[in-house]
Image (cartoon, rainbow, N blue to C red):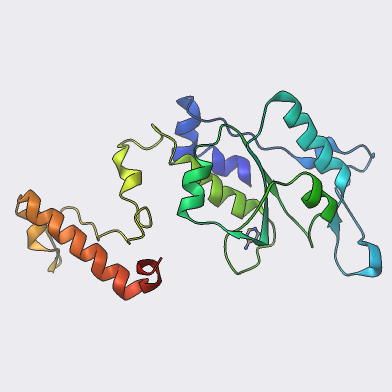
Length: 214
Ligand code: ADE
């Protein structure tokens, strides 16, 4: 699931260019029992399965023995909400571990002793943390200088200045009678900039007024 994602498109190019390294680890490779089990029944007779300490500890310890990690992140719906400022700050880190939660959860002692940051994508529950880890990896890696062709483009993203981005258009100027704003074809740079800012403000006001109060 993750191998395909991190070896496609911009993340693949970023790795080929040597700008980032992304390694996916299978916790089953760190088990000690013959069945390569990573989970077990919860104490207390609760429903579901819990990811056990041993494989997670073995994996994280093996990685930490090779290099220093700025954060050991756990993806969980009860974590701190992931957003653009968090992506910005994590993009400055040298090395990160993201542990994908699964099943009903992981043995809480892992969270107490090994995890430094718990992160949620939002108030909904995914089956596993892989999609959350993939989304975070994408948001973080695209901010690493050189990853996006035009370095400016990450700065213009929606949310970078708490404003939604202005709409964009390309050729043809008239598609089946659907026309974009004439100002964009005027070649008048100042007027185009002014249009872009007013569109940004108007869309933020209308769609995400909460951002303007932050
Ligand atoms: N794992 C399950 N649900 C999640 C969420 N909303 N965010 C991050 N990780 C999760």
